[in-house]
Length: 373
Image (tube, rainbow, N blue to C red; front, side, top):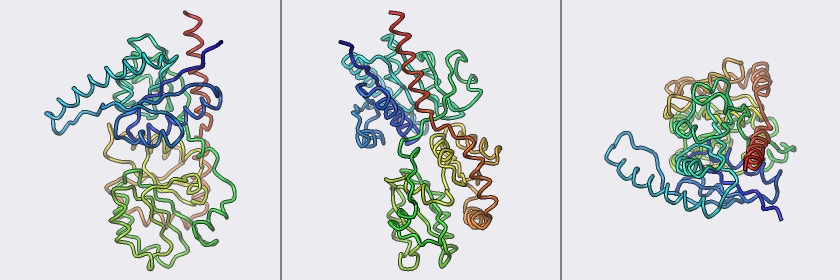
């Protein structure tokens, strides 16, 4: 009797790593229904809640990132890394995977390293145009490196690179029809245009501050605002905004049914993480990108500029938000030709079958390994 395919997917820390990982697992389950899938994440990070919610098993490691401000705290980081390597070895030997997938983030380090030592095939998925430090460190262990941007041989061995695009969550690929029903559910009047503001799972403080300061600009206008504040800023914003004064502003810490929010949005305000950009391209709505300045090598700005160069998005720097964000929102909403132009151009950048391409490479890698045994 043939044993079912066994796959470990490791990494996480942020939605930019977690959601592509879930997308890969969903596609694998669709193509190989009896496959056994185990996630390995970092304890107390986003993946420990989002992965089980998507229906997959996960185990946590105490691994964490370097603290560049407080160097003495890195003693604990090193201790937890050694502990995580030991735990990863135990997990891998017990589960005995056919292949390990690393999606970046702290947890992928120990798991992919151990997989390399144990001669288990490794596939790495890099989301960004600027390769993360973990994936660069792990590239020697990788057999295949799936990327979403061209010219990634700056960071990885060229012979290992396969261009696949970034995985997009299954529910995002299937934006629901019947936007009218969703508008009714959210109490959005028929003649209102909808602005979707995405503050991330934790919150984009500068975006939230800029919107809050200029929120009076949407009062008594045929506009509806869906405002995902992130959990860190939610209480402050919910307290500051009087819903009797602003009945056209819906405030929430996190949007569970993101596909519904995308379906009714006329304009989206978002950070420019690689996974987010891939989803926005599939959705094909006009977008104003606000790159986070608090990421390695300013890679969100690089991601955003790639779209701007194709006339597929607008970009506002984080330090110009208070003066520029709301005026740009209102100006763009009044320019139907420009809105259509942005929508058309960002759709051209979409790779909706990225997850399928990655699974093709994964299955090919497993088959090659079996033939070589």
